[in-house]
Amino acid sequence: MNLNLVIDPKYICNELSIKNEKKIGANRVANLFKTLNKKQIIILIDKNRKSINEILKYLVSIESELDQNDTNTIEIFLSSLVNNSDLADFESDVEYEGDIEKFLNNLFLKEYPLQALVSDKKDKKNLNVFSVDENDKIEELLEEYRKEYIVSDNKSFREKSQNVFSYKKYQKTLFNTLWCSTDIFIIGKEFFVNYYKHPKKEPNYFMNRELYYDGLKFTLKPLIKNTNYTKTKTNMTIVTGLTSAEIKNFKSEFAIKVQSNDILSEFRSIFKDNFNFNLVVLKWEKGDEITAGTGHGRKIYGKYGGFNTSYMPFEIYQNPYNRELKKRIKSKKNNGFQWFDPNKQIKWQDLGEELFNSNKKN
Image (cartoon, rainbow, N blue to C red; front, top):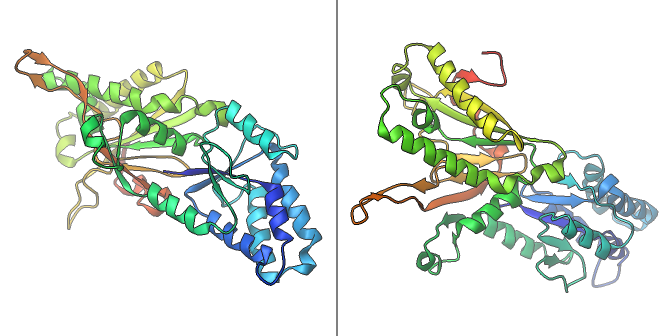
């Protein structure tokens, strides 16, 4: 998952000024910024980025006293934050007025998902607080967040391992990673064949359609709040696919487009208050020596990161038949997830040609 972090500007300025036989502040700050320059960390910045400009201004005032290499590292990092380029940062709508305590309190009042602070204020409850010398602790936490986790509402199973999350905690994890993304993608090859209106009225169609809808609603619930931070409605795109064999079950590509529009219309109607829904259907082969493709491609991600999932992100519920009760009982099945950097995995556009794309004229 991502780590949402705030930098205390006065603390950094104080550290920059330290220079004695045991410590050189600028070098320590430069090393810290190298650690913070990671996609997995979302640096939460004040409105108009005054705190970053405060550090830059102080850096310039003492530049002649510092090592040039350290100065360059610090200046490049801070300039990227000021210009909103390259780094994984997000500008909040909370102003910084010289008081880090007040700034943090206002972030919490607006329910920003803050998890960490770079500062010397060690008494912050519910926050991971790091000094400029604790790069190793930051790396350890990031490594912990990159582990593979299982999601289960089986309490006895969760008690066996710290790597087993409840579904409630999973929702919080989704929010902590996707809260400030304006474009979110859900990848699931099997979605289309399990959701479209089957002409033979197969009973499994009705069950899958209902379960997928419930799972999608559960997955998106924590992301409804995104608009509070981004000030815009989130674009939600489902990317799914059909193999050559599955395509033959339709009379024509036009029939696929009709079904695609039907699915899209339903989702747009249901989630119109919170999301702009889009749908992409690919010609998606399993992949072999002849055809390009991959087996499943199950994941959910945004600008700052996302998760590879064991099942499709919205494939949460099951509806097995209970012989004793003589009826089906809906429950959440175990799933799994692991954080990834979207820039370091294959793009969905490379999985196959488009059969339908609601963002384009079809």
